[in-house]
Length: 211
Image 1 (cartoon, rainbow, N blue to C red):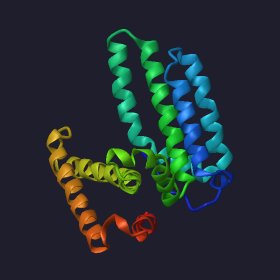
Image 2 (image 1 turned 90 degrees about the vertical axis):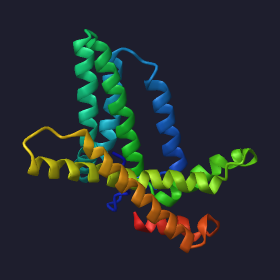
Image 3 (image 1 turned 60 degrees about the horizontal axis):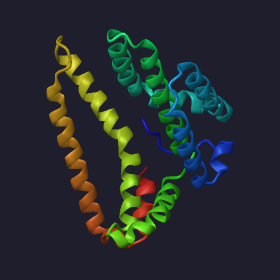
Image 4 (image 1 turned 90 degrees about the horizontal axis):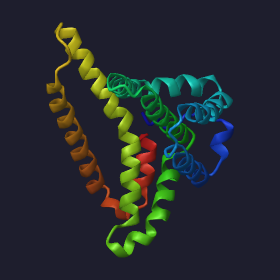
């Protein structure tokens, strides 16, 4: 559900990445303690306005990237309706929609290497605990880079299953999906090893270029 950077520039592209990430964290901290679905609905309106202010391309791409989220929201809401907690279900769904949509917008308007640089800076205090900042920043970049590809691959497997069988999608599809993720991890590890690991600056640049 996390989109890669959109080439079409908007006013949000010019904002510092640290500021956008900070506002995302602040929005999350303010929204998740709320329980009234009306307040949460109102909190989602500014997120929609941000998408609209960036242009039709952002609204269209953002909607496409958030489609997989609808399945999760539907499952949560149906469960809450069955258990007789409709308003609580609405609140949970609106929280998820707001935070994921805003996170998606941040990745759409931010360069991957800039986001990794911010993560590396924030992770520097953890160096004394044995956690290398560069590795943490690179790991975050990999998550952002491969999440949409992983979701797309899952949709392709689902479509292939439906084309060959009239039955419902089987949980057995998780096996090839997991194996493909492991295969991707092996390829990334081999590519990093061939480039000298995480000690060279070009690994960050190469990852952003591949995005």
